[in-house]
Image 1 (cartoon, rainbow, N blue to C red):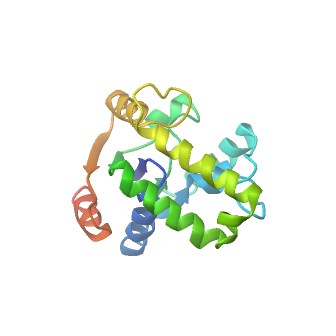
Image 2: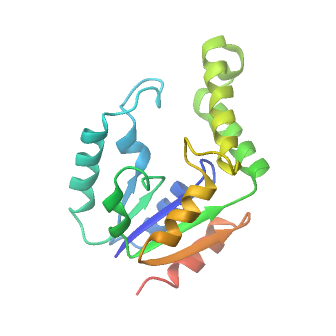
Amino acid sequence: MRIMIMGASGAGATTLGDCFVKNNDCFLHLDSDEYFWEKTDPPFQEAKNYEERNSLFESDFYSQENVVVTGSIFRWKTDYKNLFDLVVLLYIPQEIRLQRLAEREISRYGNKILFDEKLNAKYKAFLAWAAEYDLEENTTSRSFKQQKQWMEEIKCATLFLEGDLTVKERLEVLQTYIP
């Protein structure tokens, strides 16, 4: 079975994927950030070439029958619409997501992110980008509107989980879709 879990940054897709794989050890977890970004210090500074990214992703994806992909790959390649048996879209209110992201970034980079001018500028830009997810007119980056539309176009089972559900609650719903 091949599953994709997506949503806005901070919606909990990676967390749910990690928990799902711990409870279903026959699944391989592939997180889109591992394919999208070059390994840098600090992380998330340089995107990979799309051909390399897609090649690495496809190699890992096809290496196992049971895969859960977390993150946003829906715009990477048009034929990715046909890869999955189940697509899950997570949606939580913007204010909760942005608070989670702020806490995650401070945890990741420390208080330096608040005082280092360069890091602080990137931090603020990242939060501004994340806030655009909910804008109806956002057409240049990942958005709720685009992900919802993509889910309407795909031919597999879909699951929309809305609200600030716990990981356990989300996992319980997701488990009902696993044969």
